[in-house]
Amino acid sequence: MAKQKITRVAQLKSATDFTEHLSAIGTDLPFKEHLSAPGKSSLGQSFQLKSGQIIGNRFCILPMEGWDGTTDGLPTENTKRRWHNFAISGAKLLWGCEAVAVCPDGRANPNQLMINEQNLQAFKDLYADLVSDHEKKFGATSDLLIGLQLTHSGRFAIPDRDRIRKPKTLYRHSLLDKKFNLPEDHKLMTDAEIDQLVDDFVKAASLAKEAGFQFVDVKHCHGYLGHEFLSAKTREGKYGGSLKNRMRFLTSVVEGIRATSNIPVAVRLSAFDFIPYKKNESNIGIPEEVNHAYTEAFGGDTKGTGIDISEVFEMLGYFEDLGIELVCITAGSPYYVPHIQRPAIFPPSDGYLPPEDPLVGVARQIQITDKVKKKFPKLVIVGSAYSYLQEWLPNVAEAVIDENGADFIGLGRMVLSYPEMPDDILKGNQLVRGSICRTFSDCTTAPRIGMISGCFPLDSYYKKMPEAAELKAYKKEARL
Ligand SMILES: Cc1cc2nc3c(=O)[nH]c(=O)nc-3n(C[C@H](O)[C@H](O)[C@H](O)COP(=O)(O)O)c2cc1C
Figure 1 (tube, rainbow, N blue to C red):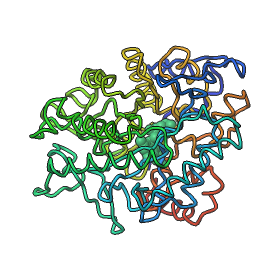
Figure 2 (figure 1 turned 90 degrees about the vertical axis):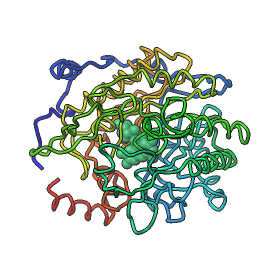
Figure 3 (figure 1 turned 30 degrees about the horizontal axis):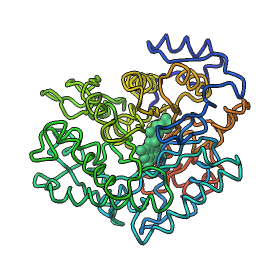
């Protein structure tokens, strides 16, 4: 694939280089040239939830799945190693750890974790290991908060070993049905099936509580089912149409949880979305064309490449009544707009060359997160998409917290290549350059071709695996 000219972050050697580059590409980010001394940084300040629970610092590990469970939905050694790395990162908030399916047909891949009675002990062990691994390194665990992300993959479900997509959809989508080859007679989920799914989420939340987790994330992002509800304007019946109906899935799950386990509910939300992108003749991403107003992007404008946050604000306005305090802001979907969801210089195998400097994508998420935080000061807001900042991540992160643009800085891909980054930043240690994620996207390409995920280019554990050579050969062949 031919690469277009985008300045690599590693080439921006000084703070001035970085900020001048931001101006040159016409974007803006909070930035603190001189980081505070260890112990003085806002990133090290603790945070108190309404319940009185303290979270020891402002780093959060975002959910990162590895496509590496057993086909029964149990963790393997690879899964346990990834979770161990979350625990020893130094972050005091672990948002969900990874997407865990609440029922078999909701799995995004045949190796996704799944929570049910049979698997409960494994989740108890995972939780216990997180706490003891964290304790061994940092001592205190009373200021550590750990949630479990609950999901149904909806349109992107690949539940069985045959690896055939078995989509569960809520409405006829003007572009995605075709893009992902849905047959004309594909049946939408019925209201009764959704009612059953609500029960599955409620049950899964009870099991998560029994396993020890302190909250559950009812996932509403990245094109998966929870997110699809939010754009189901054309769906008839109680789960579609008005925003109240589109939120009925969430409100029903919350009510069910309140009446049973009463574990706190958090929401990871794609706060904006774009029209699906495709490759042009130079492999660069361009928006699909439509000759109608595009109304299927929740938090998007009707042109498909802009943001209209009004409905998102309306939705978040209900959260206090629903008792939802923790919200993690993310965007889009890795399946049809990866550049807005996980800004990267190298695309995954099913992606396209970046249509913009990836720093624009980082700034977009940071700016929207800031707007949400300012509008809803009582919500506890976690931001995403910081990994592409690379060397400059600490400078942006500290500025965001100083300016109250978020309460927590979420780290995704960076934790795969450089798990100790939060600890190093908090201690004022020099960053380990060789561990900094350069967004090669191998962690996405590998699962797209049926392999486990991991940081194949930088993590010696994955570098040594036969899968690393296989992936290299695949990329060579595909000219990626
Ligand atoms: C390999 C991989 C696995 C991911 N798994 C999940 C997941 O299980 N749940 C989720 O909500 N997001 C998941 N994400 C998205 C990340 O949490 C995060 O939003 C994204 O990578 C952008 O943040 P970053 O710039 O720090 O990587 C995943 C991303 C990658 C690359």
